[in-house]
Length: 394
Image 1 (cartoon, helix red, strand yellow):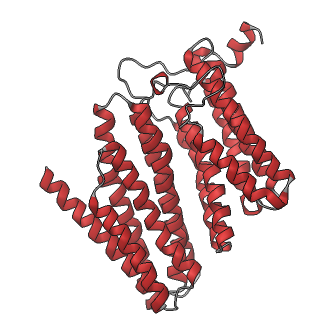
Image 2 (image 1 turned 90 degrees about the vertical axis):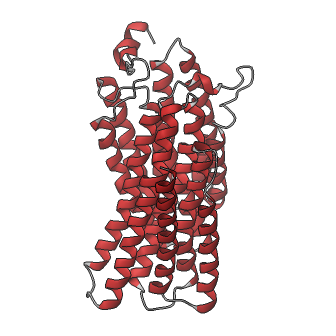
């Protein structure tokens, strides 16, 4: 490619121009891009609802891992690329189209539309890495993105192999996910080039934290959509109404634990720390992925609780009901460990109580409304304890 051609399609002027410690502004283009993930999360929750088996759960988790990583890497890219620049907008629209194709393919991603799902994911990964390497050409960040792109190409081999080998598809895709998620921890190491030191990724953490907050809101929104959709289709008798109220309070409590306690801790740490890239890698890319996965799983749990308020929860639905808040709490503990350098003991205690409740629910065959009430009580006590602790510390 000639320099003039590169300057036309991938101008270095597409990079954000920030001064000092200025935090990048979240643009309308980034919010527009996130709209696709509203649909993606709906598709994912419905996939889990329709596949309540061990294999179905692993398939849903694999799909989520791909969706989360594609969103996560794009959010990191917009930390440096200005989505309001013409070149940045074109990139975001292309990535948005790929994300939409992934969401469309999701219901039959392991069968008829495996090629569409993988094709969109691979194109999205390689296009983003290739663009970023070019826009950063001549700098250390350009080399960093070349190494990231090579790791994406390596994982793509397993994604594509899963398409052409249906009998091994799930195993190959799990390997692909492991390669994708391991890459940052190995610093995108390559022979002769070595790894990319964390200090060579000049990240602005508060921008990325805000982007993670926005996608978490989308995940909580899926609970609202499922809850409202279910109630609008059935008679509003006392049992489902009470179950829906429990589900609504579960959503509110999850919001409270996340926005009032977790993210405030993150904002304080990013405001005072200098190692934003290390904090964001574990505290956002990984911990937030677990929290978002928990929120989506809890949306499915609320659907089951409201749909069967007085009937004994069958084992798959019970596991999903406990797994949702448990995943959220595990992700929160990782987040606190990174951002506050300590894990509130109450989160671990609440996690143990949820597991114990799940065991009791399976032994006593608890109905959905009672199980939901137990989950809500645990989350409410945790939120109350954290609120009192915050007020005491202030």
